Length: 176
Image (spheres, rainbow, N blue to C red):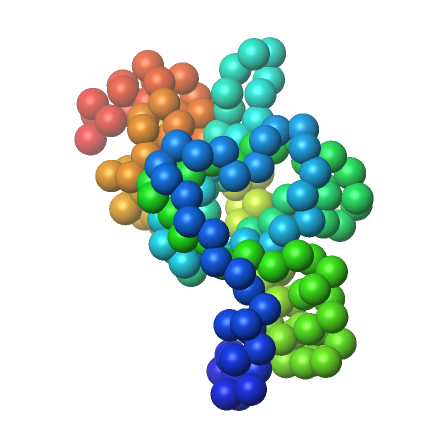
């Protein structure tokens, strides 16, 4: 979608810029934030803890939007933490400020509706792969859909994202 000059200017002015070093926690697990993020540069890892283990839920890289959904939409604490895996530049807006833009600029609202559907689809596909595909198939899908992630993320994070152990990932990689 193309925005008008006015809309581009409004978006530029409305989103602040935050810079983070590699390994910085942007959102602590079990905290509250109503920020909406656009990853301009870098890589975010969304994670949670289960039985003392750090589990990777999702990766967000350049040119993608994300937000702590429980806080933004349900006014609840967000179970997930977010950390930078590289030096990262984020464009940030408070969700309430974004809602104000939606009222004034319906085209921006339509754009973010599409973004929301894309994010929902990504989560649905991940759930489908975890439920119905083997570890080898999940790894092959990651290679096909996001091959550059392998050079940017530790094998431990990739294994937990795929729902397998690092040892299983090493066996799968050894077969290739």
